Length: 448
Image (cartoon, rainbow, N blue to C red; front, side):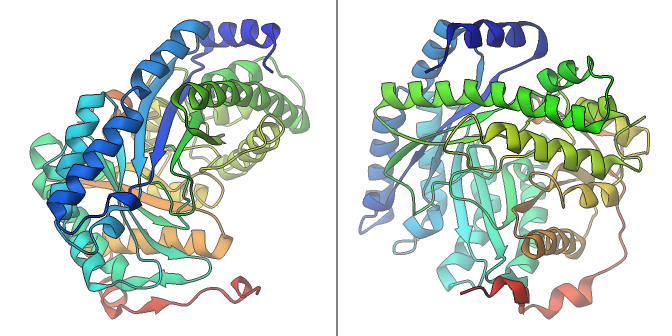
């Protein structure tokens, strides 16, 4: 039970430190919607999402109004669509159906235009993946993800090679909007089934029929607490743990209440510190408060390790069901401190890659020159996947080659923010990428 004192303290954090619940995400299984034709499947999908999630937005707004806790996003995730269309094909039609119902029920995004090909691809999965650019160009709220590797399976380099081309094609087809389609596309290694955050959310086949997953936030709350700390790094870690506990209790309360009102199962609370473009709501500024002159300098990875560990230690004491990604996000375009560090030339792509060995999730919301080759994009994915597979953690790439631009900024609006176009290493990895095949799983993965 959440106490009145916790509610009072929470309201203080909301009013002055940007505390919010970043998202309530309803996961919905579509396995019972598979029909004999894509038209039958689309009709069943529309009806089920409309029935189960029709009151999601209103419920989130009611809870926010009653408690004073802002709930920024209301989202839906569904069973990987490549599985739903395996029999009938017609995945783009299903994407359009998902977009239509998402707009009608008022959710911000609907995730699950997804394929899981970490060990190999069937013909229908390859066809599905090739449909992603068209699907994202024809929809506004649909998000897509592809899992190309896992610790147990290794890395499917045929899928990695394909995803470089898919990202390029998506950038071209959405060029009139700053290549925004790529901001709704994530390439994973070790993807999880209960992630509430977009663009990578999907409803795993191991989940119950309808589930509520909540993602909390609160970088501003953590930074404000650290401003009062003059002690050593142990005291810094203890302070973050205590704040993470309080933030997670908010998420636990909202998840339980939303589940009860929507007649859904309570899934997990994701402990991730998710920044926004708003000044003061930045993970980079937390790292600077710990003691860095600017995020991206030497010491950044160590500070991030301290932050990530303390957040998890505090959060797991506040809820019995931790899941999703649960760490500190470092999406460049969504974090004003990261943007500042990039534009100063201090935070570079190579340092971001090093940081992803620690944090959630990976190279996230990074804009790169539009003439970046598909092979370079594939190699970026391969490097991130290698970090994830070797360290048994989730890693991902959400990179935007901004068609027609090589420098400057691109504005995506809202929580997606504004991304400075980063210079990256363009030495060709084409021979490596075009070999294809599979990078074997690490030896220590064989534990059975």
